[in-house]
Image (tube, rainbow, N blue to C red):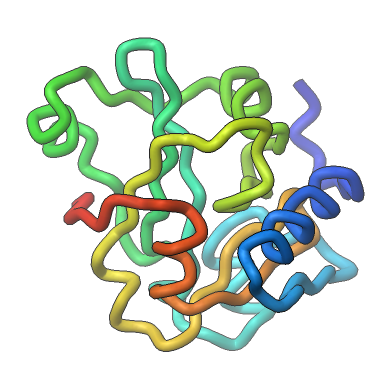
Length: 160
């Protein structure tokens, strides 16, 4: 797989459509340079790394699990494995692309072919405005914690 930063207008369009379908404003912005990490995004946006909602795909017994986690911390897979009753492991890039239609580094919380089981890091609630990937390495969207929980149908949980 080519890990070079890239633009994917069709993935971004699906994210925009999902926001519109949920009754949310189109807050997608596209940058000239890639923002594939929380640190890169926070630097460009001028916000705290903790306000970046990383869309991380894990595999639990063969099924996808989307975790919307604060960019300020790592997900504790052992903790989640105990809580969920199945082995939680980071998904391979091909698995991520298959289940989200988006590449690692640009995965959005919405705009996937099918709704994914989603967990929302409760630590993100500390930030009035969150930023998340919007389908490719060049795009981000802004959203409130409440709207993120609503549009994804996420279960709010301690993930670290």
